[in-house]
Length: 223
Image (cartoon, rainbow, N blue to C red; front, side, top):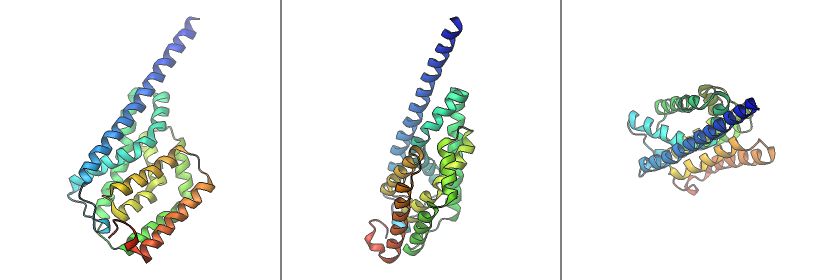
């Protein structure tokens, strides 16, 4: 009887701690949206967008990733808190965001203001990537992983890298496109893969890329 009581108490405490971890994670995401939107104000120039200084961009990129990626990471935070305990959550979230920070550093190193043709090609590539087995593998791993944050981050980068490159190509400083990509990423993390939804989405992205190539002026904010 005493053992059962202790087990129940531990279970309640862990459940409460898990709920707190998820709430804090979502709170950080919400605050990051505020920071990112304020920092991006007036910087959206479509394909001609400038990134600013390295320090400015990295800080902004981390805020963007926290805003866009942490809501979908909430189930993984919950799994990690249940499996290892509350004390593992800050390291998990921090290392997860560190992976996305490395992506941002790479973006800064390679990015140049570009034309609509390059943007269209990248978007078409992003749509085609959505149809690949590699994308499906990383999406499944990202949805199921309960491992360390760095490992989880690598899986989620593999799952969402096409969508993020699409954002960078169209306008990395566009709040509207940031929101669109964030919603797609969230849906893909929380919902099981279904061809009836995933294939039309991929084809729509490819179609958007083709439209950018042949009629760039039809895409608001691109030019």
